[in-house]
Image (cartoon, rainbow, N blue to C red; front, side):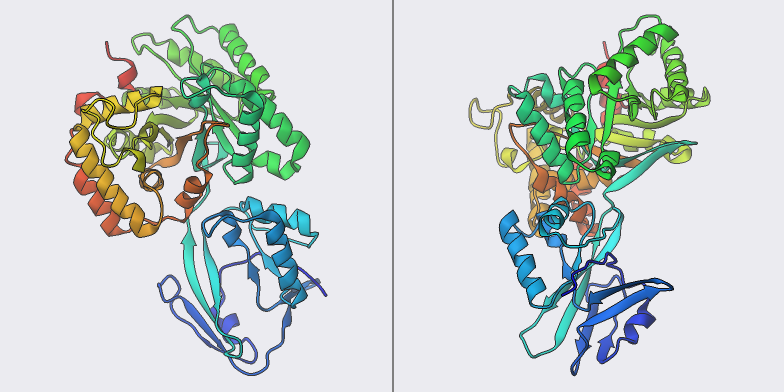
Length: 488
């Protein structure tokens, strides 16, 4: 018995489908909900050969699709899954289809000793085949769209591919619970294995850079080289407002390189406290020099406003992204910043997208005005974003927003945080959104995976905007992106 896997999900060549022997195929327009329905009649060959010149592969004409191992269809137990694969193969269904961003599928590949090839992460149309009762010889194929998992941020010759849902490591600083080093690194590996391969940290985030250094060495030892290439570590440098000399900048960056145990930082995101001190331009020029030396791959910003971003770009600094606070409540980046980004190609990486957990079922139908009546605001992020809620419109309006988000979530079979992240990812110029990870304490891999399968329709968007627009204009209340850190 020959066992193999092919990797193309899309029916691009409809004429080829029409010519399938011994079958009568009814084709419907791609992209419609009715999809494609294939009616088979008579006795068909079980296998076929796909080839081009000297290249060929014999496959079973009914493929076992493994998208369902990604988690949205129920928990997969490893040994049971491999045994099921063997039963399919033993019955003659010997071709398996998967993708490299399905961590479970790749793991099952290693366990089953089958020959596999995989697809690169991309926006694609997946085909799900539903088998009817034996003897009816019919397979109904429906097409669903999967959102793009990775994206490239770039400026000129500088570019970096990141996962669109970024693992935020602010939570390692201690205010969310004690972090055990080994448990934390194991959790980082689980996120990476699940396809969440981008980690965001800062020099001021306690042990975050050190944990990344331990983690990346585990990846080097325990994962294949192509997996290592997918891992990205984005760090921030938050210096005091001192004179930005070349030696000072170099020494500071070398500290992060040593802690993260990398020769070159994938991305260095620069923060500056005081715009009246133009030293930020000196620092960014020195960072650009380090990039040219290979110490940094991409230079980026965090919490800069629109005016300063334009000045920085006009000074020839090749910024690829600006990390800013952005959520359904805080839409400031879409008022000024996004327009400049669309003209220049700079992307936004967002944090505060689920507002520290406030945008979740946990806070639905709660009244925080009554002491001890609701969930405690017992983390720095909950306390921070509760202040944003107060500035935006208060708890009653926030409850109306949560109820709307809950209706959308129930409609799509996902959670409120999943809807909140998807909504921001769909905004102009947004490349990625941060979801904080409490390593070794709690996990939300399932919710994060659901982000890539969720597509918000026009009704969803209109319903969300109807509530969100009732809030105050935070650009007028607080100022532009990052101004919350610079107000007296």
